[in-house]
Length: 116
Image 1 (cartoon, rainbow, N blue to C red):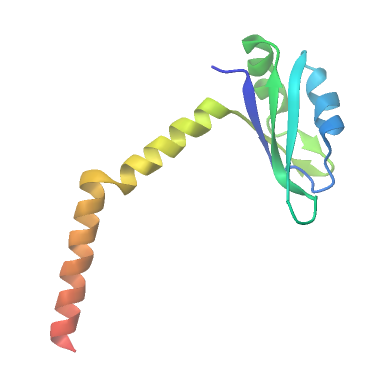
Image 2: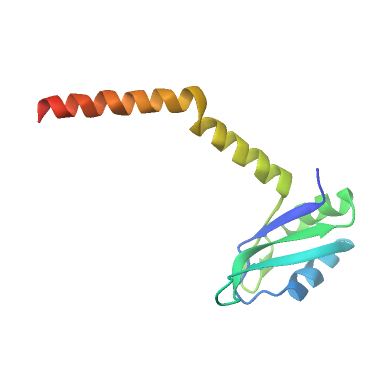
């Protein structure tokens, strides 16, 4: 597992210092980034925290996932877990499965056109 963590469902008022303080309770933190809207500068509701060690990252997931910050329940997950999920979704949307779905849609739509 990597040391970089995804932190979701952040309050829009969240700042890097808030996450730094929260995550330092479980271990040393390397970096904190709260993703912000480019036009308004407001937090977008998610960010990333890089812990100093793999053990610290695992402890942060265990202890801080579904914890509260600013009245919101946080999601804390390893970024490699998110990448794995994204890859599985992409695999389902491409290749053989996508061809079958496309063929089914074409078959149904051509049948409907004949009925109309």
